[in-house]
Amino acid sequence: MAWAAAAGHLAEADAAEALEPADLQRLAEATYLLGREADALTLWTRTHRAWLAAGVKAAAARCAFWIGLVLELRGDQAQAGGWIARAERLADEAGDCVEVGYVRFYAGMGRLETGDVAGAAATLGDAAAIAERFGDADLLAFSRMASGQTAMWLGSQAEGLALLDEAMVSVTAGEVSAVAAGIVYCALIEACHRVFDLRRASEWTEALSAWCAGQPDLVAYRGACQVHRAEVLVLRGRWDAAGAEAERAMHSLGGTPSAADAHYQRGEVHLLRGELTEAEAAFRQAADLGRSPQPGLCLLRLAQGDVPAAAAAARRLLGETGAPLFRARLLGAMVEVLLADGDVAAARAAADELAGFGAAFDSPLLRAAAGSAAGAVLLAEGNPRGACETLRRAADAWRALDVPYELARTRALLGVACAHFGDADGAAMEFDGARRALVALGAGPARRVAEELAGAGSGDGLVTPGAGPLTAREVDVLALVATGRTNKAIAADLVISEKTVARHLANIFTKLDVSSRSGATAYAYEHGLV
Image (cartoon, rainbow, N blue to C red):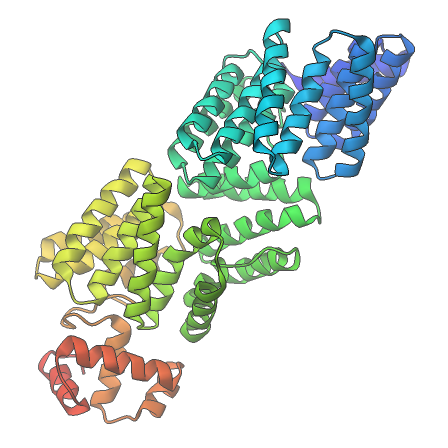
């Protein structure tokens, strides 16, 4: 269906002579599918009145339901409630009709949101029974979608996702209307976001994209759904498409608090590309709208070289963040920041906690992230053999998930571990693979990142050849200790706090098994670090 052409023809006909209610309803649906939500609501309102004037109360109730649902999805709950109440009254007056089931579906979703799970399950069961009796594909898909969300609420993740999968099958098989299709998909990708199910989100995103490709001008995604879609595209390495999706979400959500996630996602894309000024602006816009700018802002400060600011924020976040979903998304970045600051013990604790979330959510994505974090910590702890084993498994996991950026970063750490054993060929192979992937992605600045990963630079958290178990930042500190500088002078040279210098020194003494600055200085000269 060419929705723009259909809407254009119907609008021309309506301008010449008012359309009949059925055609006016088609115009409303086509307008909505083109992304013109406000115009669609106006047309649906006209259609509702036309059906009332014609005395067809069931059809008028259906229009009222769609108006209420669209208003609910964009956050206008008071207006939505009024229209749904009207839909319920008209459906009751119409008698035995499928529109009663639509009202029951809406009521079930409301009960689920208030925590009345048992009531939601019963109400949604009624809606599904009505859908089957009348053979209404849209209502049946909605009922399965909502039943899946209810099952997940009750802790039955596998059952819930299976019901959502079944609802999506009816979408891609062409059994439901285009308006319903986008709503079902958005519910599915929201569920996948909550349980870190990248594989399922990616598969259905590709399937729905293929379905949409045959319908020019279709805008199937809305608001928060677009943000989650952008997240999938980021992980897949399709950063241009992810940025465009975030932009569309920002446009559709306007200046509402719901737009905060869209601004944050846009900031992440800028950060990955090395567009640091633009990333900071996007994170600030997200914060202004009420969304935490973390962990993006921490990683931005790290990219800017302001390790103390990044570390201070990381410690605050770890101390105050309790929500499991947000905390699980936070921990990988916190490990990176804490290692850059030389706090290996805190990084170990964060990596172990992330591994726990991976097991609890049964999420391959979180398990891969936990493996990369654990491998980085093992390197910092001076255990390259353990790091090799852990990072190899993590790299395999990222490869299976098709997440190229994280795979490249993990391969770089593998190169560091190989270098510890004097395996120059193995290290070169991993570094080269990481470099080529980063350049292809446009990770920015890709050349500098690749050089640092290969040990040509002095990036925080990386191991310098000859440094043994020390990170690059610890090598920086050790080199200055060997010149006789005090902790205060080292702090000034490296733009870090004296407390951080002291922590680095404690780690250095432990790793090198020395008890004094002179012993550490001797090691530095023996290994060519000065």
